[in-house]
Length: 135
Image 1 (tube, rainbow, N blue to C red):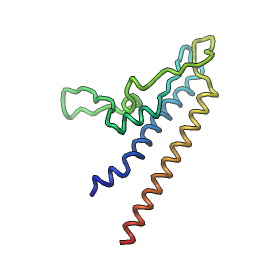
Image 2 (cartoon, rainbow, N blue to C red; image 1 turned 135 degrees about the horizontal axis):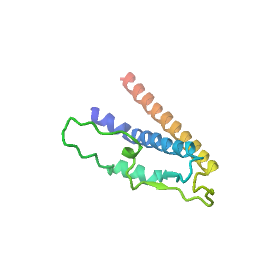
Image 3 (cartoon, one colour; image 1 turned 180 degrees about the vertical axis):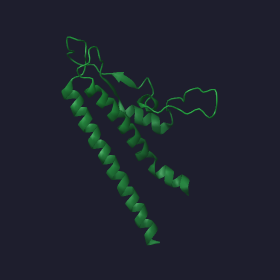
């Protein structure tokens, strides 16, 4: 029974984790807008999401003891091959490729989609709750 519930929420859970990690990546771009030679990074959300649902996640770190903890960071959520440098039409003189308009638009779009995923998950929970109470 619990496996069915887990499967029921797996898509939204995956979407929320990936959106949260992408938000951190975009926030790092915005925070480094004035850092010389900083290269803006982003991911193709659709391909990463499809890979995550198919079970193709990044490999765990190799440890020498089974009690070692795995690190948690943006790099652990996205495979290293998924994080790409953003190509900008015009970089600054200092080599920085962060375009604030592009980053703010991507940040806002990602935040809106994160909230939509939360709302959708909330509706799924309400539907499940109503089904349980009606029996």
